[in-house]
Amino acid sequence: MERTNTQGLLIVISAPSGAGKTTICKELLNEFPDLHFSVSCTTRPPRKGEKDGEDYHFISVKDFRNSIEKDEFVEWEEIYGHFYGTSKKDIEGLIQKGFDVILDIDIKGAGNVKVKYPESVFVFIMPPSVEILRERLKKRGSETDDIIKMRFDRAMEEIRENERYDYVIFNDTISDSVDIMRSVYMAEKNRRSQLQARINNFYQITGGI
Ligand code: 5GP
Image 1: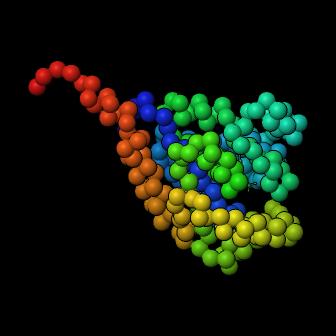
Image 2: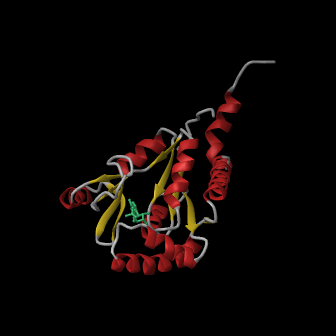
Image 3: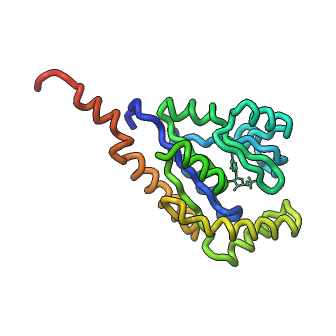
């Protein structure tokens, strides 16, 4: 795809845990080299298989507080007793270069991004049903029953917030959801406002036939 000097697109994806959002994001990221993942900072310990600098920047509470003081986050939240935050420098650097960025953040964080970057695209991933959501949360394995219950209650609360999003994807199957996500991405990339720089360049070509 021809690069233009248009700013990159911010795509904010939220979902209750257990909706399958991480897998959908990863599939899309594999497909589009110009699409980057915004690696959040968190104070929660890594889960099995998670890599520092890829899934999250796993940092200490002290470092996190330091970053808050230095105003280094676009937004940050405390979730399940841990801090999560989006680095201002990371995403600004990428979108200024024209790269598109996926932010996998919770609903409150998404609300804050909307205030700072109103042109962003907001996508909400829904689990296919309440039963499936409950089962998926149980299967994660790395958490206690209390945490699972807390995550389930929070998930149900979050699902009610879907009306603040531009798109809702019911994650019935990963491949269908990736298809929908790809369509959303393509449509948003081809919004007139996104193509303004390319349109301007088009008129500047000189020389006769
Ligand atoms: P998990 O611990 O399961 O990886 O993530 C818990 C929740 O934190 C998810 O809803 C995830 O989207 C959200 N999250 C991850 N990074 C950020 C962030 O930088 N900011 C906010 N507000 N939420 C985040």
